[in-house]
Image (cartoon, rainbow, N blue to C red; front, side, top):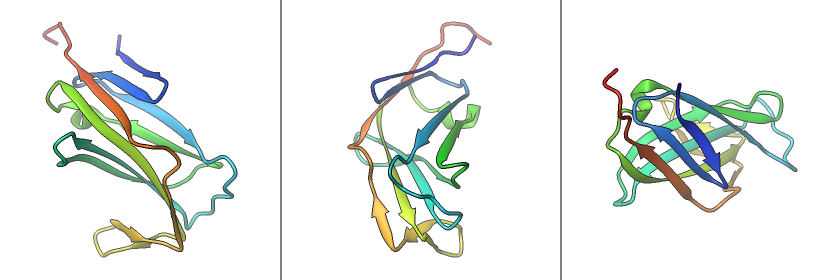
Length: 118
């Protein structure tokens, strides 16, 4: 069984596991031109994960793959930013938009060790 939970805004997942988290954009009418950027960084500042997500029915679904969570056990910081009328560079990276919204302060993503050898 996978260990994936959210307590408050702390996301906790076993190293190497998968998961899915949904964020809703309350009070914002999302369009297909709006993108969400979910970023995870080391506390020292280096980015370990960045996902660009398109809205689905007024929400953003952020998947965590095995590859995403095969990072060293420990605490990281995450945040989510919404780019209204997002602007992209040639690699698909969000570089700006009509308005950038950060709905919450950064929070903790905790990668915990798995005891089993599988």
